[in-house]
Amino acid sequence: MADSAPPRPTIRKLPADVVNRIAAGEVVERPAAAVKELVENALDAGARNVAIAIEEGGLKRITIEDDGCGLSAEDLLIALERHATSKLVPDTDGRVDLLNIYTMGFRGEALPSIASVSRMRIVSRATGEEAAEIFSEAGRLDGPRPAAYTGRSATGTRIDVNDLFHATPARLKFMRGERAEAMAVTDVVKRLAMANPEVAFSLESNGRSLFRYAAEGPGDAGRLKRLGAIMGREFSENAVAVDATREGVRLSGFAGLPTLNRGNAQLQFLFVNGRPVKDRMLTGVVRAAYQDFLARDRHPMVALFVDLDPEGVDVNVHPAKTEVRFRDAGGVRGLMVSALRHALAAAGHRASTTVAGYTLGKVRAEPAPQAGFLWQAPQSGGYVQRPAMPPQAYAPRHVEEDAAEEEYTPRGYVPEPGALEAAPMARVETGSMPAPGTLAEYPLGAARAQVHETYVIAQTADGIVIVDQHAAHERLVYEAMKRQMAEGGVRRQALLIPDIVELSEDEAHRVCARAEELAALGLEIEPFGPGAIAVRATPALFGEMDAAGLIRDLADDFAEYEAGLTLSERFEEVMGNMACRSSIRAGRRLNGDEMNALLRQMEATPHSGQCNHGRPTYVELKLADIERLFGRRG
Image (tube, rainbow, N blue to C red):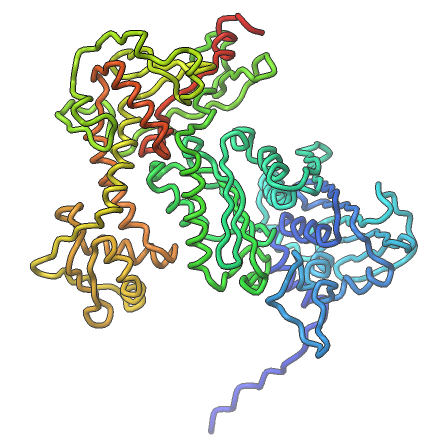
């Protein structure tokens, strides 16, 4: 007897409420996602004030109130239907261009998705219309009907979302604790506030105000003020402006000085056409731009804004719209790296003010600081507490400072190398120093003394500067080596027997596609059959090296960051170590001319405010702060 055929399944169309709950699983994965979608709708409506309140991390209640253009009763009903939106307008032929999007939202999924898994009430009033409200419970609608609108403005919308995920209780099992969910909401709202400084934001949790940001003025000043309110005053005081344009793509924003760094990359933000996005390209960009200013385990603070034609970026690649895809990703990345490096170079010898704040906290004995805090004297008088920067933020990564003394030949320094040979500390005649009235001409002042044969003390027009002679000269030598390499190119050493490196076909293709770039850095490669690469020459600076390991690291870099960082990083590391070994050692006595020459060279050298490992090369203390330490000023 023949086996009977399996029953043919019947294809059925899912009910609308089931479709909405499925969509909610993608669009509204947690309360923070619901808050994001609703706040973006408020921004698209032209709101200039957005107030958010949550209870129990947003699971019990979410309230969003705005002063946007509002919705009519008819709009309220349509807004809760799937794929209904006012943000995509068909052309005369009825076609919609999904690559020409100027708004935050565009899919028409957020409101019906949230309504399908909660109890939602919307009250809104549009211009020239009476206020109306509509209620939805798990997708079942009640209304619209007339209502009393109590908003602060003539128009606007108030949305109350209660008992989120009550219609899908299984989802509640995957929620984290109330505190974690509240922190996620806070992060989402702060990112939107950073992207929209002209809009006022407030957030409450369980009746307690978490923050309130007033609307800021236009331009970079308003943006930096908002960034400082969110990222901290240290960032606003120690950030350099970034502004560059290339082929229709503009990059703006602010980047923190290298000496202002953290142990993680949480304070690195990217915005594309005003939309907060999380793109792994940002990690590679920042790493490439700061690679010779920071140790590998330290991370700078940046907030970057990319603006380009909407057709140059696809925002429709993720349901939550937190990821984007650039049409010319390589061009955007190149612009970001070069703009960051240019901004850091323009900072010259600046070091972050947090260094001076940390120093003052260590010097001042009373009042005794609490654990984890230091005392800083603000310009307005009095003392305030601020978190102390951890000492490990400045710890060298590669070469210890107090390594055994060795002979050295200073390079890349003014005056000539012979001027810095070991010599007894000489008395510098006062006549050879700048007169007090000319100190303002020198940002780092005039050398007055050397203490412990390690630190140079200089007097400025309004304070003093303490210079770490080894760290400072290490940066000067390093920058000189970089210039020499740029002028003379990278010398190669040919291998008698080429190294054959086995990779996957995809990895080999990615590496070979950049053979010309690698050749410019002294690494000659060529394909050696499918999935293999022959290494013909390596950079002479490296000496003997593990070519196979380098190629594999490059393949990983190309896959993750779409650019090779490992080879250039190894160059930076080798040059950094060479510069450290050939710099003025702690314990060397310098005469007055040598100390002043060191200061002048620092003023003329970019990035001289920090050594190759991100540690500060000098500390500047203002006279007013010193007088406060001794009680001479209130």
